[in-house]
Image (tube, rainbow, N blue to C red; front, side, top):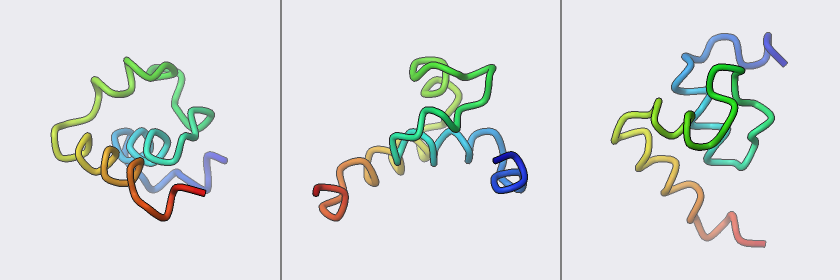
Length: 59
């Protein structure tokens, strides 16, 4: 998996993981939701919220 997500920054990896419910993608230093969330800035948190609430995410 590392080579697939390697070009992303730590914050970008966290944002993608949280937005799509992929906690398995979180890096060891930010392995739980709270630690990962605190790593994000305000803009990134808004993006995670937007994706998580998107109508196309509801099955």
